[in-house]
Length: 238
Ligand code: SAM
Image (cartoon, rainbow, N blue to C red; front, side, top):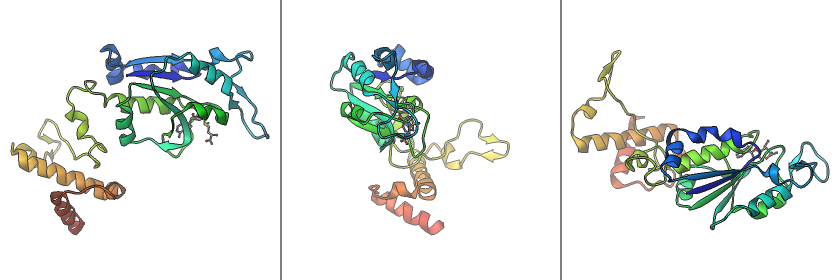
């Protein structure tokens, strides 16, 4: 995958040098290029200006971003504008982006953008219902969540297919050695070596956690017969 990032602060992206994303870059599975659109500003490197009609703050001008985009080699990319008014990012969205060959992120700053910049983009994306100082942290979060879904980036595919949200449910509780830690013991079923019982226990725990913490995820979730029976049981217990 090729990722191009338009930003005024390329140095903010240091976290993408490390961990899984850094390794994906080392393995050649991912290439990231930074483009400081200040370098393309015609008017004395001014990237911002006052809004027409008055109002507080400064807006990013269209010219530096248009000129910057024109010098990026593009192969049918998804062009993502970080914007609190956009579609909210989630795991399904990350799975969709992981299929793409090229992603271009445009990180905003100040009070926002000249609206005409939006003619360049395919997606307007928000990280959530809050306002960040700039789009950089949002872009990094999206890149991290997307890159780990690219085949071969994480060793075993199963490492993420069981993750919360990937299956549509929250992940079941997990334990590692020792069996007894300060009087807290691992559930017996996980010690049994009985694969079918362990699968049932994990599915039950996933459903229970989702029912208790995020019942909204169960709306429209396609329950199997087994899951429906488990959910009835969970509802009775609670
Ligand atoms: N005045 C804008 C508004 O009310 O929508 C907020 C501008 S914010 C201070 C500056 C930039 O940070 C935005 O243009 C966007 O690129 C980024 N940003 C802020 N909050 C964000 C969010 N929740 N998701 C994605 N990007 C965000």
